[in-house]
Length: 211
Image (tube, rainbow, N blue to C red; front, side, top):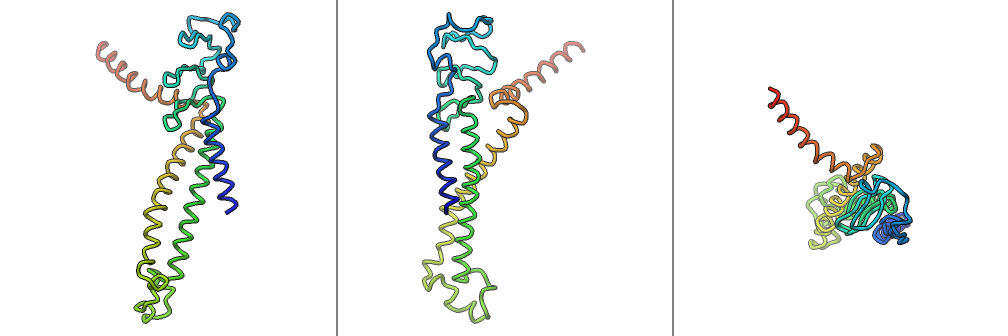
């Protein structure tokens, strides 16, 4: 229980933190005027919406939030918040601990169901000592046929949603750790995927023209 409480606290705090931390560029956070910003190529890095000279290429303007984000990764529609350099690792903490929490909850649910079945000897013939026991009322959960539905209710209401959440967290954790290993971002990943078919089409058209 202590482990579950700890994981739940970490997930709750990290979830609130990733939503509350403002990822926008520090020049916008501190309201530094444009004429005092670093002299760089304004034609390439000037954001006319934020009136900001972006000093690095990883600073992107989020059209959903209407601000330039430092180390832009993606706009999270679930949180309605941008993910950037300031809150990316908080998000990773949320995802990783969410994965651990849902795994622990699933294990606890399976242990609970097994305990109920073992005590009532429903659908577990090895707990019955004889064929007489299998045909007797001892197979009825706690002496009541209605209580025999407890494991089924737990599976439908608790286990199935937990498994779905577990797979969601697992997919998010795997995807983001692979991006970290590639030193890439979610935005760059989807941009490359979008540009790949276009490159393929242009290559085919070029080959047709040359032929």
